[in-house]
Length: 297
Image (cartoon, rainbow, N blue to C red):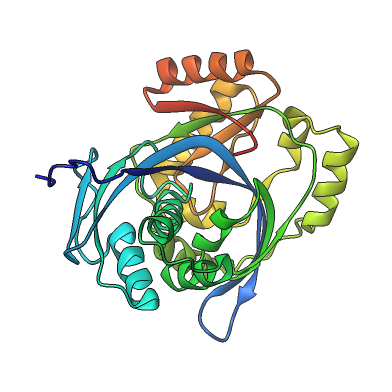
């Protein structure tokens, strides 16, 4: 059980999910990572992290998702310890994490939680670390972590450490289909290596130009989206391809995949359209669905 909060202040922050609208794999780097280019947007599907700072140097972690590990692999605890070392502090903290972003879905939930941890503890412990320091710490925790220190829409390159905010109009909603799968990112990238396929997808600047022309319509953007990892994810997890085929049949059009999977999605201009598809998908496929705005978070 967590220690009583008494008069100790509780710090709270939302940790939003990300959605890869485009994802090109440009090859394998000398360091073993993959060179990528991805247009990413944040969405308002969020975890919530609460932090109660403690003076005794200990950490306690509680989550409403019992499947989430609380050992050395937990990104919240890893982020806390990394910040404590960087800030040379002996403070501790109690964490409560309320999960809405599923693990292994390609939505960056763990990375977003890690970024929220660094931001909250920097404030709670009074460290006054610069954001650049927090970003550097985050990059050592995971390739997606730095993204969550930036604006709602970004162009991500390199292994994920080169991030440029993009000021493009994008209005609408996303319906997420969340199959009961956990697509491990290393497994999908190994499958991509073994497939050795080449693609001719356009660079992100062409997609951005098309988005400007479309006036920010999410539905108009849908046919332009792609993800080079999709064939690899389907090869590694054949049941995901089956879910995608059924989802496309239900939608009457293509569905996208975020990151290395398993989240599938379709964009809509209105909340009504997004929720209507979510209801049909839940009924026809028996899959968990979520609707979220492509909002400024």
